[in-house]
Length: 445
Ligand code: ATP
Image: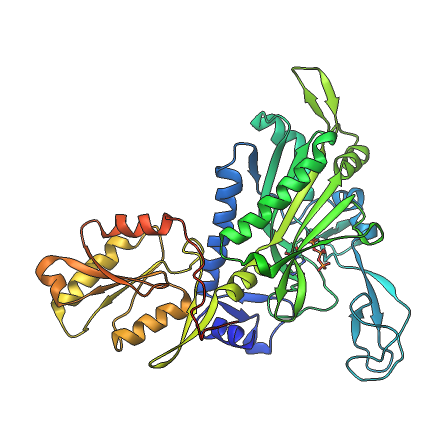
């Protein structure tokens, strides 16, 4: 984890928020490559759920909403974590994350306050007057707007049950404790799907979406052996849920939730219908039937999944120059898709051709150009940020307009014609990818 955090800073993936002012807890900034990785994760998720499937549509709602939403959904009352404070050192903890029979992990004394419920929604004021009537909340999850807009979306898109509404966006939680790098944040981003079904289809849809969620992670490079399932007991579920299964990942700091899949029943639609006085049910115009659908929700963090993709990608292997660090990202997620490298920077012919190729490839994917240092070192620099392909322009390129295409995973180099290079790279980027097994003597983080 330490190596990964340092690589993320050095190579422009993740920076501590407000670092020059000493940092700001629970928020991280994403550098050029981190922004790209996150965009690619969101894009892959959106393409797979919204574009490839015919039963799911998208939504992009506001971060702010009427406080009535949070009252009806139960968040004002129930979106709480149990808070306990050490009376000696005044450090605060989530009571379900410390052993209150034991001493304070910070100061070693045992003098706990009573456990209080702490609401983790961020409050703000809307408009120029800071008074009770203008209080609003930053959404702590993206899904409530999906329920509130259920009828509008269903009507506009003429969707029939079962169908889903997907949303990707920022959410805010005033977590009592943050930490483990980008695992637990106060400003986070979620990819959420609310899948509406007839009540008798809920259990089958739950199993299907749980399976789809696991398959999606595995297809993008997460080892199945690193995942586990945790079924929440009846006593420990969120207030809206009738069944929750967490997809757990074996993080370096312990097994923890990566994604939640919940059966929210008809709780949210019913609550909003009651509170707003507006109907939020589904009308089947073929059968004349009216019903309140049940909903299955797979919800995963962009930040938490990017941590997992980084951990899974991180690989080190011994080579003749020392240690080769490689991020073996799925090509779809890799921030930089191609690097263009002229073999020698002093040869104007090589540089001109390399620049021509660089200009042709740029536009629909992130391409880097690097002419400094020995080519072996330049390959290592690209390996370290997970670039799947390097294009090297050498003397032969000027004679026959072919270049070397180097593959990050196999390190195989093949000559390909400059004309058709873009098509060849696109073909390779789209081809099925399997996570390469680490070779003997390789340590995987
Ligand atoms: P926890 O019990 O760990 O606080 P939760 O059960 O409240 O989490 P959910 O409400 O199920 O989390 O959120 C769905 C997903 O959103 C999580 O699986 C996780 O990927 C992401 N997520 C939730 N809270 C955070 C956070 N504070 N920082 C980063 N990601 C988060």
